[in-house]
Length: 183
Image (tube, rainbow, N blue to C red; front, side):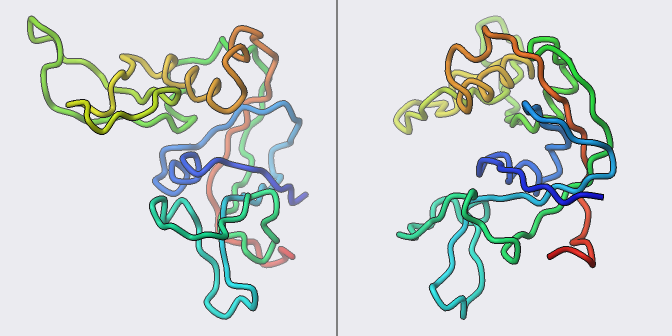
């Protein structure tokens, strides 16, 4: 078994903590049984007397010294993921359920959004910049999980990255407790 660091954005760390994210797509090769230790945006004071703070827990906290996950030391890690499956596919071949397992956010809003009373599914648009003055500040959203995942992928990898349709490793995982022999 290998311990392999992996970076996740703050929204995706939140999705893992909420139990919504059980899959990721990467340009890397892993094997079932490997354990990923998640590197995330964090903060601590220089002498570490107050412990660790994680941006996913405090997204609106104005800490002047948030540190990028790439600099997270092993002892600060709180999330461990056991790889349960690995497959290869083209990025755009993602299924609706796999897009949900990627952790895309769904707004469970119980209202009729279109004239005529059609209920609209609200999957987050990750490339939209929220306008707090707009009545539905989540707008525009998507009616399906694949479009939401496409916007997530583009927000991380660039606007044209979806059109490139690269081959990706689809890594399924389950969250586990910190392994005894870690570090």
